[in-house]
Length: 566
Image 1 (cartoon, rainbow, N blue to C red):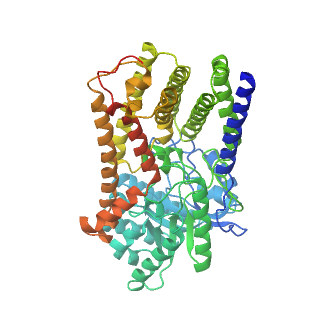
Image 2: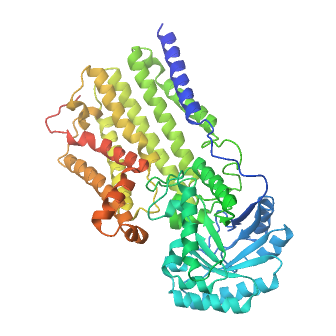
Image 3: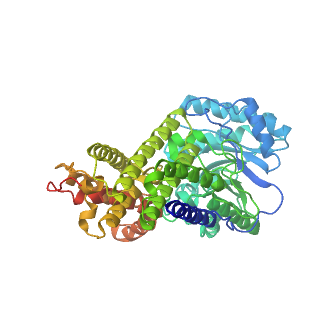
């Protein structure tokens, strides 16, 4: 009878888990299919893992060749951002695969570097007029503050005198509005419209209308200065992974929705566009975190991130994840097999559900962090945090087993649990500090702390079932871990975590209030604060992170020196 009960409960848990996994991972409608044929243009940077312009490790010629062969049936044109740094063979290889180019020259702080880059751009444009159809001098130089507009105009004029192709400068759309004299200097206006990065982030549902609105604004501005001057949407895209901003949520499905919606708008209005970007860029994670590395139509290993037609899956490997999580779960059940046969149905289901959730958390954590790790250092951290979660999970499962089988608390297990939670709380405070102070490119580390947070709730549930009553004493940390290890500093832990919640909300809100375009739209705190708070409090990732912090703080509010051994 106990064995039959165990088998039936196992089947029930597997059925529930499988049903949830199947429902949550159903392919989703991502909008109208992209019409057959090639895209207009894709941003092209052939940097693979281990290659980075920051470290001056530049792409090899064979990499550029392989990448352009992949892109030949996907796009008519490519946009490049530099003419040196390994990019020299690009026009020759683009010709080989029938691709045209919008060739860029990279500008920065350094005068001599800029002179060399401009000379290479001019030389390439003049040597390859059949391939290089347009030229862009500098990319987001004004946004970064690398130089003033007059110095930039000098470079633009220098290139215009030396080449026959139309010449432009590329930056976020607001920079052309703030520096309208640029409109006279360029042959075509190149604007970046990135709804995710706007000072007031735009949700993917409203992104197409945002594109239309911005292009019209720029057209209206240009009409009074240079009527009829062409406009190129030089960059527009959406990230497939990373931190949420306001209501702008990175995801594979949302990237597909944006790209399809953008192409519909472009075709309807006849917009000239370039999508950012062809391939995910691992090196950008050092500057812009996970979100910066995941804007590509193809992954860093050159696999399609999503299809341009049909339904789109957020996680194509969900069946594998379900299998791995279930295998890990069955292994845990095997370890506790004898003890589980003595549990009542209620206690058995609680233990099985919690261990299954832990298994899912570990598999999802390992998968996500490994996918978003782009260096040996990042992979080392991934291995470390997965092992830390697994060890904490192991200790929690042992404690669940003790509570549900009415065994007394063990001092050694209690000390290990306390040490484990102090580690995760310290790490959570460190990460929250970074997010609050300068979190623009930092992802919310939800996957890393889901197991510790659920672990505390699991301890409360097990104590509730064991004691057959619910009161505030269930949340005492010494009660949860089964031994009185109270410290006078416990209340400080609760205070620090609570202050971290407040700091996180203030930091995120201030980041919006400090945005230049945000200030122009909402001058003054009284006008801007309601909007900034709205963007902050509609951020689901942020709210889940705050929930993790609050759950971690709960046991430390109620600890007291009077608690005796469980």
